[in-house]
Image (cartoon, rainbow, N blue to C red):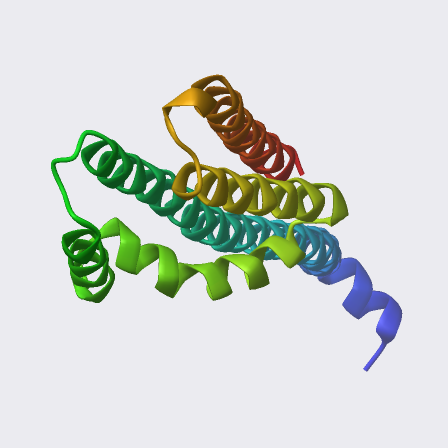
Length: 193
């Protein structure tokens, strides 16, 4: 067999075969590069989705923590209202000391009352307050001390101390408002990250 004759006779077919072979090699490399690029993009998307999921979970958990602390603060403020009501009724002579104690114990033992929630949620709220940073913890402890000071002042006061009682009540409410603003700032910071 003479190769020269073979090549001359089949040059058209060989040229076509060579073109098809080169075309498939080029297509293979392009496809391979495209697949690598897509795999990198998919991996970037997966990493971004994981990061977003982690951020959403963090935000959701922080919201739950903040909601628990807010419920504690609300229960404390409701307890103030309850104690104020008892105080007024006692000062006006509508309620003897024995009945005051009975009402307070009843409210404390009633699982659905804010007084009972005050007692139950305080430990959890204190724990969660530690996780929100030193500034928040400081204000939360300040709120608690103002609350205790107010309740003690209310129980041990008479009608002559009304200005002091009002001022003390305003400080408790103001501190609760500061805590509420701190909650909002924490949530906004989390959402921005």
